Image (cartoon, rainbow, N blue to C red; front, side):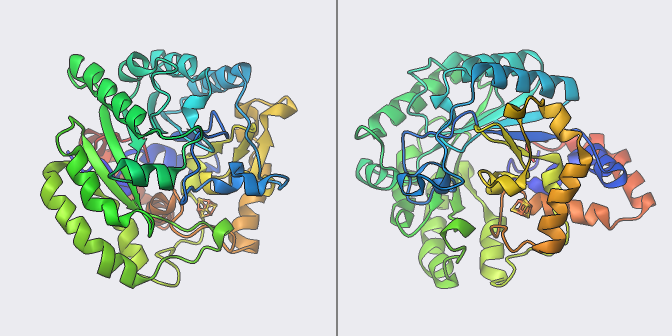
Length: 389
Ligand code: SF4
């Protein structure tokens, strides 16, 4: 079974959708990133969506602390089922579990065989009694921790209403207990964004979570979003300060250790384009984002910016109608690819790796595509979580 974090192989595992899009200009998404909430009970220093909900952005075009209303959320899920969407990531925007309707949406999607994962800070799982619902319906849960001690947790995540570490730990513990009682039905992991504010606790994090019954402890590099200037940290930081600590953490965690290595590689090897060798953003065409403000965005990195919206659910249009309006989608993508030439795109964006894989398929011959389709089922069998591209 291959690595759980292998976006390129996951595109190959969904070659039918990838090729359908490349050859016809439209296909149902494989994965949809859904933001149930733009509000958040934390305010992390490295937040990718700071420009959505931080106080300092109040009054700007992107500022929103919307929660998606129940009717909209449930209708969205119905469209996903109808369109054969394979997976949903509950993400943000803000903290997804702040939306009290999430539980019902998870149960609905689960009962209709849509695979789901969630990125959460984990502090509200008890408030909305999400433990059973998650374990029964989801494929994975990732709790963002980003520190190894209570003090750093509170200083970098800035929980509203005061300290939150103990609650996070008790909720992770309860989730693991429920999962273990059901024979480890889902994969539970904890995440650590490496930034100048957090890297000194890489080893503390490893020591703290070593004995928890988790599938993985994942480290990933902070990506500086274009809204914050887009200037990535220098190589000395990654290679000189971070790498030795990661080596130590790997010793401690053994098989549980995971690192987003492909991003670190692009950060170190290509300081100009950071590995962006593709001329089209094809990954986004099988993994769009639906914002809590009702807009269907090209991708999570462009959420909030209306020029990158294909349409809005508040305009009496369904997700299905918006997605199938190919002309509007092509207009938006033409702007990104041919007019801006990716100038407003954050480096190492979420679909960066799938974009590379899609670009290879786009440039392949008819015969190569046929061979890929013939191998698709075999590839799917050998990949963990194949639909989470
Ligand atoms: S940031 Fe740009 S390249 Fe990346 S997915 Fe979004 S539109 Fe595509």
